[in-house]
Length: 476
Image (cartoon, rainbow, N blue to C red; front, top):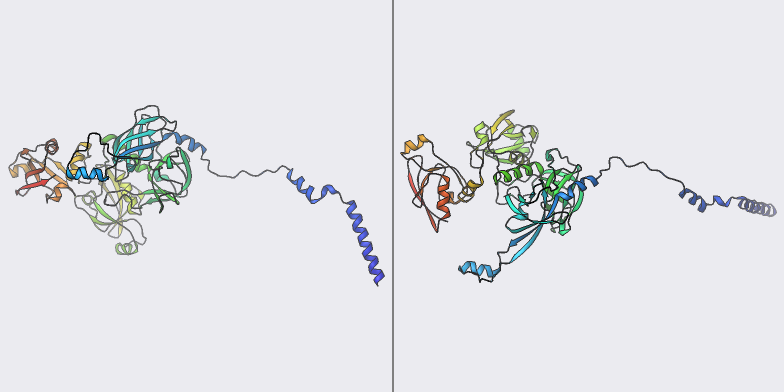
């Protein structure tokens, strides 16, 4: 048995040796791998991959670097002289600090849109183009409620960006952010639109008319990107970068841009009128929830709830009732207060809009004429804005019937009033101002002349529509 086992083992070894000697060494695993590497390999090209090159090349030259010098007013030295009313020494130089941001050229003759917070209070504004040309800019107009401003440089033939339609931007769509973060000029980052009509409550603090309906994106945006461009893959301007969501002050995942449709409208107002022209519905609004939907009889949580409707506002005059729910503005659905405010703010006073409203258990259509914040359909001019902002009132000549009734032949009537100098002293809408510091008031320029020469107080004399004569003393 042992002999047979030995014979089989010996025979196996001989066969194995012969097989090894007969094996072609060119087919060893090492050479086999080498032969594989030499074979040509082809791969199918990825489909539908976005190409950002053209969009970047077409936009980077239309985005500028903005450097501003701001007067610093918080030093103890300045406070001492201001408080005690002393004059600074002749050789005294008020301290200044530098700030940087971005801007977007929107016309070949040098109009540039940026954020209001980039240039507000600037003592000097320097604009640096992508080709390193440098210019001094002036402010054309600004709108804190939307955080937009327009500045201008004196040049022609400039590259500029075309406005796109931000209403057509879709969640998930690729976008590019172009700007100058951390003084790194001409920086392009990519991301997608992650949300629309986002309200992050950075403009509304103390400003009930602030418009926050941001495009949210995950394209990297940092300090210095403010005022820069958010563009789609066609290179169209769909937003003005304005803010980031961050606990550190630097980019941590989300950035926010002002929609181009709103920006284009505000920019047009600032260039044409020097002031933003916003249409108002004359309502107080609230977000819809399950409780409100059940209360009004809606089977879905949608639209925007009208918590209050002012009788003399655009909605009130059209017949819309308190407790109604706005579903659409000019055919476009609105499902948040941010969306409603943004859609309405794209129109000027005097313009007509249609509202689809759920009211009394059914959907109704209303056509209404928007009014300004003071209840008028008039455009607020740069000239009038001083009185609107400083005095907090709008004025018009009383009608002949009222003047005959009161037996007066001159004066300016307060047609609307809000928080300001006049309301703080108890002056109401309808009051007719006849004299200021003994000067007769016939027109707006009379008010301007008196106020521009006031030293100390202001004595206002006038009459209410009920015939009651009143005197007000105001310290300015």
